[in-house]
Length: 320
Image (cartoon, rainbow, N blue to C red):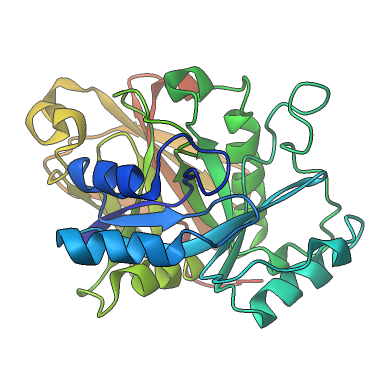
């Protein structure tokens, strides 16, 4: 399995960021982001500038063009979008029509940013308040927003715990919705061990930016603080394959220091937990009647404070 790091929510001085396009792209290169999504608020003015920075400096980072559509009812991330659209057509009581409009105008993946971020009167419009009736219209949810670093890991300003629980609930109901994290860069972030996103591929994609969008649409993304893994369905078992190639905060050197607990959430609303050895594959017998599972890794204790990674959903029959 090939894992590619993607930072999918970032801003520059083209909107309300403090880093210029040149500074942002250079930072992404220095931090070894493999994909950088430029998602300034309600503008695509920085896209060509980002491409030029990569070209003239011969950076390895791939630019994924997008926009964060900022409204009074929540923020929508439109990846692949190369021009700003008219937001006056948005009806928050029926946002599905607006999501369709975004796709018609070039958006390849439509997601919801920080859906449970603290709202009025402190941060007007940041909390998602649209009445989604058909979740098939949403491609992905930003389940962790780390714009304030480790302070947003729980259910504080960004409401990450609620966002994770919403995604879990929808996936276990059968909806095909991807999960991502977002640094939501506005200024140069602190060097903290927060969740990051990896896209997973069977082979090297021709275009990394397009490949990441495809991974989101296929729910082949995972969020992690270091450990990487993927799961396959074999017979009546799920086989979890662990990978330690990520050097993120020294995970490749220090993973043996962790007492890792693997938790499986099944779509019959039951949960199983096992302590696992990350040096060998782990076999999970499939529960009778189950068709979907979410696998998460924790450091010793299964709570938000100790969450290490959330894997891509596993499905094998009975999809919605």
